Length: 195
Image 1 (cartoon, one colour):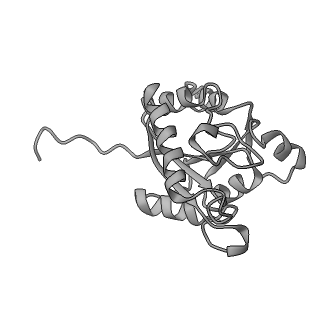
Image 2 (cartoon, helix red, strand yellow; image 1 turned 90 degrees about the vertical axis):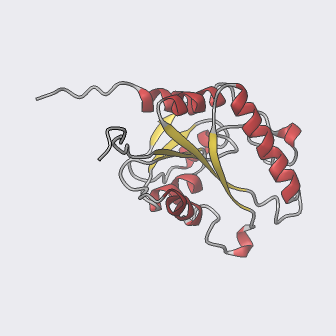
């Protein structure tokens, strides 16, 4: 073997919901790039994850497409704005997985079903069990991630407070005020004591 071979480090991946986690949520949907507004500190939190070696992936239900509220060109423009805003603070969102269907379509990709998470696992060729975190503001975000094996983190931005009040969160769900606080926790030095 050549001396230039490096040990392969396991892929560190985190899966974020979009609306209510990265950007402000709206009961009327985010229908235009102008309506996409980042939550304070969220993009900087993604940059800190990147600096710590994490690849950040978004998994988002976008039923506004099926409802005719916006088309794929507009959805791509919204995501272009998100990627550009992230890059301006040194953050990189590796990929965006989305479900364009309505609840009536009964697809496998719409959260709380785990289809998007299965696709993410396939794309990155890894198991989501035992180490991959998913961050969401609604019960369905956490259910989809939990079923796929992710550790569920609830943020209280977006629909998070309502989700917490309703209860029924997956076992082991950790709760944080926002994405920045969740990232503080994820990146804090381990307090393990050598025996």
